[in-house]
Amino acid sequence: MNSTGLDEELTDLTPIADCSICGYRETLLIAGSCKPGDCYVIADSGRQIDRFFRVNPGLAADYIQDGFWEWRAIAARYLPPSQLQPLLTDPDEAVRRVLAYRVPLEWLTNLRNDPDREVRITVADRLPEQELELMAGDTDYLVRAYIAKRLPEGRLCRLVADPDDQVRRTVAERIPSVSLGLMFNDPEVNIRRIAAQRMDIDDLALMGKDSDWTVRYEVALRASPVLLQQMIDDADEEVRLIARQRYEALS
Image (cartoon, rainbow, N blue to C red; front, side, top):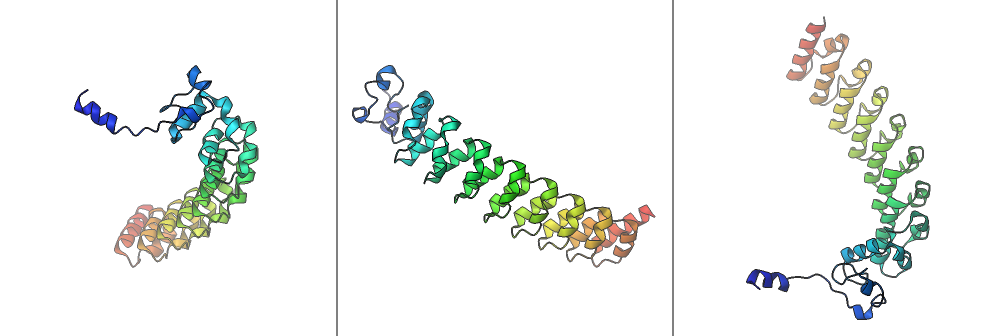
């Protein structure tokens, strides 16, 4: 063996289970359905446990009440959906995260108020649209951000004053243009800029005197001649220039 091979052998840290303490040593081991260091349920390795249940999915149900959370979480990936219900109240969030991806849609309401954010985000990603609005008041901004991405456009009004910029930005990008007047005085400049880019032309007068010149510039790019005439004397040179150019072109 060359030195490179010897080094690889000495640094191989693959967990190897002790078959002498495993109940499958006389059955699955002999049949080749498990293999220490590769596919073994009592190994200190999530990958080996996952491979074990992938090869032996029928044994997953034997581990859903086990005291080791990783066995329950990995076994839950291979259980038939009809057998997942007892795990909806599992004490470990890793298990419930698996369930949030796998349970039938009608069971998701059981996880809608889960204490774990990742569980609720997955629920928000899967929940039918007609039930999604029930999560719009979630305490976590990332959950509400998912809600804002999936809610029907006509039902986004309740999020226009959300305390988080990311949520309101998504709302500004998706809400029907006729409703953007609700966001003309948003505290975040970038959100007002989006509103100015999408708002109906007849409503742009709401933003013609915005405190930020970049917002007013966006308004001037789309404004009607009447509003442009009012913006020709804007305090900012670039806004005045584009307002005058467009007014002259449209007159």
